[in-house]
Length: 218
Image (cartoon, rainbow, N blue to C red; front, side, top):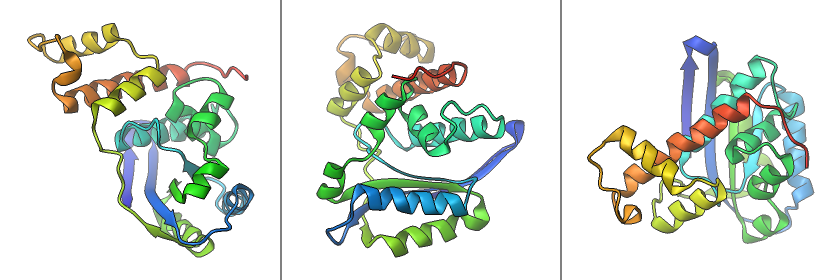
């Protein structure tokens, strides 16, 4: 589990985050059960984010942190694209304008529940964060398992790059800005940490663009 506090003076943002990966200990939980738990928690903690998500297209924890930041920034400025913080978080994870795409790509399904491995995040003020997480643990029988967001592989790199429609010219442009001596040949086999850093920069750019645009409902 990740637990972090964030404070940004320039945007007057102060919030705390819990990100967890869990294994369901009992069968029988349904998608509707999960939605009901989220609804009850959001009714009680109205300024918070409580969201379960699919991590197949999540690059690493930094992408999650950035998605939360832009969601929180949009909320305090009353510029939410979706009028719902939970959906907004998925939109910024997807860095795309289509609600259907973000839900299909990052929302959880009955298949995810059947597999028994779920990811969730809680975003709230420091005082209520642990309260919300405690309620989640009381309503769902699970055990925490190791987070794997920082698992860096070429396969994951290619998958993320394809989903976000990032091309080689964009990759090379960022690499050149970082170090003009970087060897661009066989780029996929070079420093994987640097490649992930480049993807994070490009994903963050997409989030910035998303924050400046309206939504396209499809």
